Image: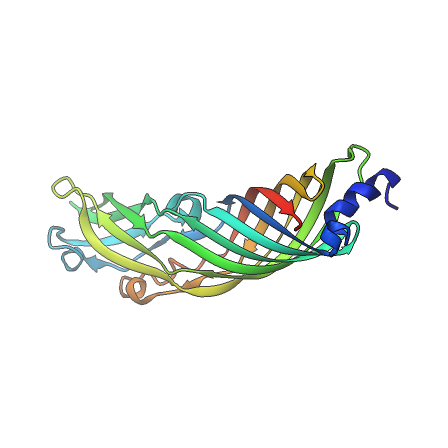
Length: 264
């Protein structure tokens, strides 16, 4: 049952009263914070002749990877969304959205080279990876329900959203170096980790909007997303015995954004 005082204002937000049409538009911008998922999983290589990786390295060793989260491989992605909204009732709507995310890659310690010295293993040679930039573009469909609340004014409106879609993630790679006392950054190689891939995403949001004009509102929202696994590239990794290092790329993220809704 809708509270009587909600009807006039909600009509401005999601009914045909908006420019005499059920259609309106929305946009948001914010950051999406990874909270699970690994760009490189914890694993160890086979025994490797280190000279084949870099002439400045000597002996035989094992590459021991400690596991690197997505949050360590890039900044939190900046995400922008554009929506076309269609009012179902005065308190609910469907929407279609286009999304774009981008983040600069970072450098991270991903493990070490374990070398047998005087009969004892020594893992004091760090491995550092510089990751490529993170880029995504996707399309989503969703449902938004405005909520009735005793705390609502005639301008502030909470809601929840359910959404699902597909996203293309650009290929991801890592340039790896080993640091010894004699050679601080000995190149190990560029590991191609993931290929371009269209994956699926599902999630939801909670938020609130505030009416600032008869046909415009601003708001803020926070949500959760599940992103399915990326397309693994094992060519470089399998040769080193690291074929399982990119097996856990599905991830959960927390998007936080501000939004503007308008009708024309």
